[in-house]
Image (cartoon, rainbow, N blue to C red; front, side, top):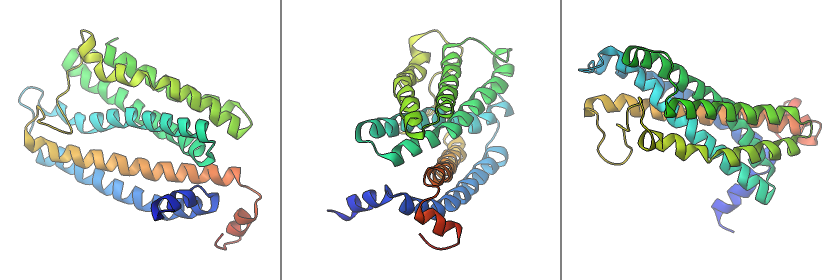
Length: 250
């Protein structure tokens, strides 16, 4: 067995995952906050105002990373759920359910910043635009996953039921992505691309990439911390958790 495969097998062990999450979650939080701080500084004080939108465009440095995270986290949650349903891996169930709260938070931030940005641009806080409407549906899906997971007492059955909803809901993601192409939309088309030339001045991009890196790192910290807490709840009363509560290494 290769070292990488062995490491993944070890990571599936509840005590090993607990030690891994306890070690790396604080570092992910810290590095994420540092990257976000650098991005915010660049967005507010280094990037010039947009020639059309003025300073109001600066909200994109929160709006765009949050929008990307809202869809990326849902896709990750669906992937974990599929693995859990097929191979019955308990850790994947835990990780899938730990994705939902931060994913819902990023989606809510996306909608809020979009409304703030849309008011001076469109003259209204909200429009039933295809991109906005599908993003709102995504928030409801996140809340549905969280609610279904909380409604069933058996943790494994709850994770499987909520995971199935996540797998079905992942079909919404391409609709969100291509809604500005498929329908007439107030929402602007894609101006920032990961691979290729973006339709933005290059001087405006570095703070955005810092924000993207920061939100990803913060999410990793949140995912590890939430999964660790759920893992400890499920394993409560076992020998290794009792030793951990006494201050011993499991």
